[in-house]
Length: 395
Image 1: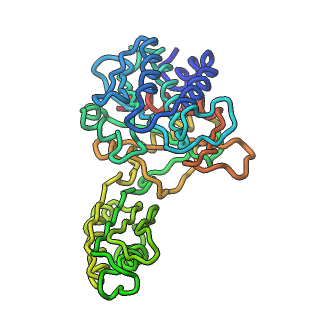
Image 2 (image 1 turned 90 degrees about the vertical axis):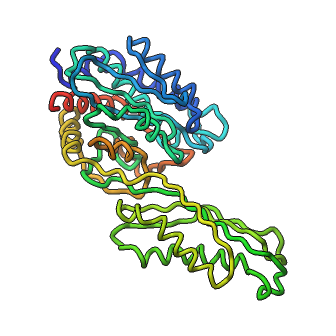
Image 3 (image 1 turned 60 degrees about the vertical axis):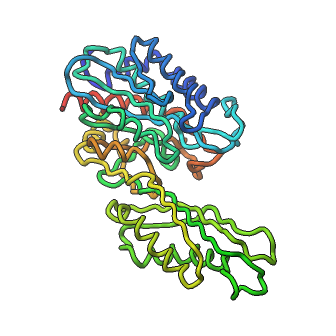
């Protein structure tokens, strides 16, 4: 057998393709939230250990890293996220989530099963690899701060030369992979604005702080102001997801809160956003006399794919799959903490088609009805293995 990604992947898939579906369904039925992925971590570790590998669990007890191959050659990383979302699983399928209120509605079960399959395929070739492939099963992608920061802080990027990942795309048909050099996702942060005042009677708003009116001014005025103070090409968008204040119809409350997400396509605008948000909020509430407390929580910067790494990944897709499998994709406003890895090493994330052929209206991510065509699993294994071996041989 020659050391090529397709030959390594196909040799393993010839005997183990059915196992990919079993692994994915096992993970789907037992989802765990970010930083609580103990059973998922143990499940992955068990498969890797039975293949003769030595996975290392991250310091917090969830997520793991495992090197395949040996020696002093180059190190290339492949990453999957392992956490689920706090959403009920609404599908009527045998592998439906058995954990109330939690499900894999973003495809992390697919990412995990695919990387596990890729790791096992690479392990079958063992020390004949021209370097090491680092498998990163990352916890807590869906929370802020995300688990990518843990992986980086614990030194797992220090000797890595490139990193690659796939993410499910329900709009893309199985067998296709979406690729883009440069910005792929948006920055995603959380914003909380808490206003306070003395409260009072609704018949005398002039004697107090009309808190809900002030809150409404911020709710509409802040997004409007940001759209005029930031270059429109930066794609900055602030959307509120939670608003609360008061309990009585004839009483002006003493406190109110707005919570939402700020997303932006441009990294420079993302860096300036916290100070700008605070300044605008102060200006909006000043006429009313309300006290404003802004909590701005950094989420993730945009994923900016390295051109050379994306070119390599594109070639890997074309080599591993049928002609026409590599397709262009657009930048989205979704956030992804894979971006933190790219602050340290070059890399690229691609979008894995999971839509069954002929399906006109797929269910989008982060919905309880989301599911995939499991034919995407061997596709992902082929791409990951081929990209890793190609990166090792060109380093």
